[in-house]
Length: 123
Image: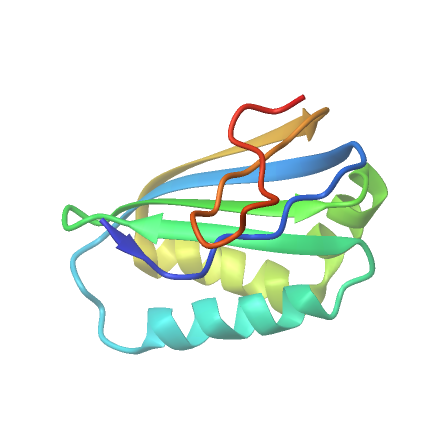
C-alpha cells in the first residue's frame, strides 16, 4: 500500500474526521494526480483544516482521512466550487465507487519511534 502523505499531526482537542474510501478505475494518467494534489493544496487554505492522511493500494482501493476543527469547517469545504467540480469529475471519470463517513474524534494519540515524548497507548 502506498502512503501518499506523511502522518497528520495529532490534535488534543475534539475534532472531526472525513473518511473517504474509494475504488479508482484503471490508471487514468496524470489528471487524477493533478486534481488530488490541487485539492490537498486548496484544503490546506480552508479555515478549520487540520491535516490529512491518504493511502492507496495496488488494487486502486484508497482511504483518505481529512481532519477538521468542526462540522461548519467541513460544510464550508464541501461548498467550495472547485472542490464540487472535482467531486463531479470523480463520479464521472475516476471512481467506480466511494463512501464518505464523517466522525467525531474524541481522543487521539500517536507513537513515533524517533520521538521519545510520543504516547504509545494513550492516557
